[in-house]
View 1 (cartoon, helix red, strand yellow):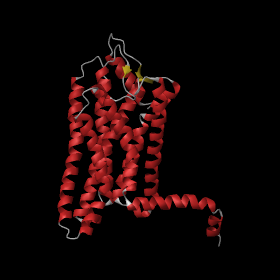
View 2 (cartoon, rainbow, N blue to C red):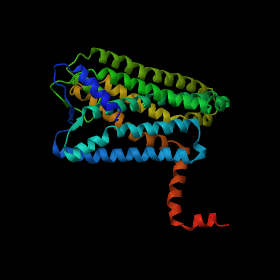
View 3 (tube, helix red, strand yellow):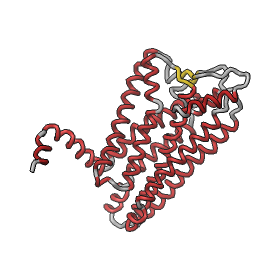
View 4 (tube, rainbow, N blue to C red):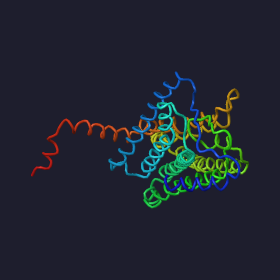
Length: 337
């Protein structure tokens, strides 16, 4: 953050010319009514705590239970970390603004918030594609699963999406820096999202919008194509299984992931392909709330309640944490000769 701020300031000074550049923005949030602010504070605080605790438990459980040290749960831990980070880029600042009754955010903080919000939403999309490929190998090539999904490949399938996500965010950020925000500095949003910033700029944003369209389409299309390919092959493989129990067992291994896919891409379709005709300007807000708050909060329930291994590991973790404090003599007994 400290190294990024001087670069942002220099870039602004080089491009502002004779116009007056703003030093910050005002975030209007989701509502300007005082009575609704209290409700929003309680609601989003609760959702944020559920997201952090739920995804944190998943990461902790996978890290402590050696039985879950498999590629599928390795990718799930990365997804949970991305979900915690995604909601943490926007919700805490929103809660602080509501509590302190301020709406301001500095230019540098706004750009930084926009950068990381792009990174974590994009990485969610990429990880869904990677997890679909993992399920494809597990179901269609079970005998070769261990040899195919080696640790080196799993690390590569995780690192590459993180690098691509940062590349996408960096591209949008570098294209945004030369833009000027002359007179108005009011964002009708609860955090610094890219689309509202482009609408607010008094510069020519056609290049930004073209790159946003091309990259946005690519970011959605490539992982979705991988998911579609994987599940097409999975369905074909499962239909060849003669027993009903075998088919159910095969489908159950990818039920949680399929639910997450339907939630993510269903949101994309509903928000961006069928926008509300009465309040089309609210589409960005609705999409941002769903992608940065609702989906990260729902993922822990999807991947734990529908997964027997995760539920069993969570029960062991919780029972261990609750049982050990009641028996302080346990560690002494174990360590005694």
